[in-house]
Length: 86
Image 1 (cartoon, helix red, strand yellow):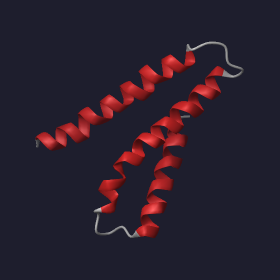
Image 2 (cartoon, rainbow, N blue to C red):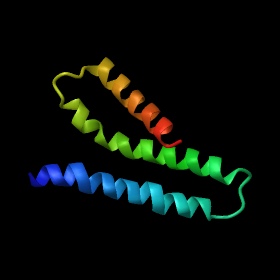
Image 3 (tube, rainbow, N blue to C red):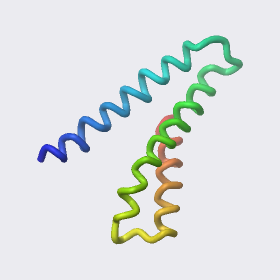
Image 4 (spheres, rainbow, N blue to C red):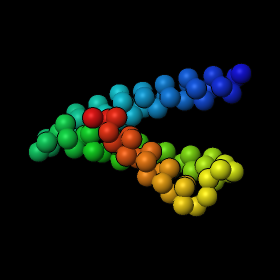
Protein backbone atom coordinates (compact mmCIF):
# COMPACT_ATOMS: atom_id res chain seq x y z
CA UNK A 1 0.00 0.00 0.00
CA UNK A 2 2.84 2.40 0.80
CA UNK A 3 4.35 1.84 -2.65
CA UNK A 4 0.96 2.61 -4.22
CA UNK A 5 0.73 5.87 -2.31
CA UNK A 6 4.26 6.86 -3.25
CA UNK A 7 3.91 6.10 -6.96
CA UNK A 8 0.25 7.06 -7.24
CA UNK A 9 0.18 10.31 -5.29
CA UNK A 10 3.53 11.62 -4.16
CA UNK A 11 5.49 11.16 -7.39
CA UNK A 12 2.89 12.85 -9.67
CA UNK A 13 2.49 15.68 -7.14
CA UNK A 14 6.27 16.16 -7.07
CA UNK A 15 6.49 16.12 -10.87
CA UNK A 16 3.64 18.61 -11.18
CA UNK A 17 5.23 20.95 -8.65
CA UNK A 18 8.68 20.65 -10.19
CA UNK A 19 7.70 21.05 -13.86
CA UNK A 20 4.35 22.83 -13.65
CA UNK A 21 5.31 25.42 -11.08
CA UNK A 22 8.98 25.70 -10.27
CA UNK A 23 10.67 25.17 -13.66
CA UNK A 24 7.83 26.86 -15.57
CA UNK A 25 8.09 30.03 -13.46
CA UNK A 26 11.90 30.05 -13.53
CA UNK A 27 11.97 29.90 -17.33
CA UNK A 28 9.05 32.28 -17.83
CA UNK A 29 10.60 34.91 -15.55
CA UNK A 30 14.18 34.41 -16.76
CA UNK A 31 14.37 37.48 -18.98
CA UNK A 32 13.33 38.81 -22.30
CA UNK A 33 12.30 36.20 -24.84
CA UNK A 34 10.62 36.67 -28.20
CA UNK A 35 7.63 34.49 -27.32
CA UNK A 36 8.00 33.62 -23.61
CA UNK A 37 4.81 31.59 -23.29
CA UNK A 38 5.53 29.34 -26.28
CA UNK A 39 9.23 28.91 -25.51
CA UNK A 40 8.44 28.14 -21.88
CA UNK A 41 5.89 25.53 -22.95
CA UNK A 42 8.29 23.88 -25.40
CA UNK A 43 11.19 23.88 -22.93
CA UNK A 44 9.18 22.49 -20.01
CA UNK A 45 7.58 19.85 -22.24
CA UNK A 46 10.95 18.68 -23.55
CA UNK A 47 12.43 18.58 -20.04
CA UNK A 48 9.41 16.61 -18.81
CA UNK A 49 9.79 14.12 -21.67
CA UNK A 50 13.48 13.68 -20.92
CA UNK A 51 12.57 13.14 -17.26
CA UNK A 52 10.22 10.33 -18.27
CA UNK A 53 12.95 8.56 -20.20
CA UNK A 54 14.17 7.63 -16.73
CA UNK A 55 11.15 5.31 -16.46
CA UNK A 56 12.44 3.29 -19.39
CA UNK A 57 13.73 0.53 -17.10
CA UNK A 58 10.19 -0.20 -15.91
CA UNK A 59 9.05 -0.75 -19.48
CA UNK A 60 12.07 -2.88 -20.31
CA UNK A 61 11.20 -5.46 -17.63
CA UNK A 62 7.52 -5.56 -18.59
CA UNK A 63 6.84 -8.97 -20.20
CA UNK A 64 4.22 -7.72 -22.68
CA UNK A 65 6.44 -5.11 -24.31
CA UNK A 66 8.89 -5.98 -27.02
CA UNK A 67 11.39 -3.56 -28.58
CA UNK A 68 8.87 -2.32 -31.15
CA UNK A 69 6.12 -1.80 -28.58
CA UNK A 70 8.57 -0.08 -26.24
CA UNK A 71 9.43 2.50 -28.89
CA UNK A 72 5.76 3.18 -29.58
CA UNK A 73 4.99 3.47 -25.86
CA UNK A 74 7.75 6.05 -25.33
CA UNK A 75 6.73 8.04 -28.43
CA UNK A 76 3.08 8.00 -27.40
CA UNK A 77 3.98 9.10 -23.85
CA UNK A 78 5.89 12.07 -25.26
CA UNK A 79 3.04 12.93 -27.63
CA UNK A 80 0.45 12.73 -24.89
CA UNK A 81 2.63 14.93 -22.69
CA UNK A 82 2.86 17.57 -25.41
CA UNK A 83 -0.89 17.57 -25.99
CA UNK A 84 -1.80 17.62 -22.29
CA UNK A 85 0.59 20.49 -21.63
CA UNK A 86 -1.38 22.71 -24.00
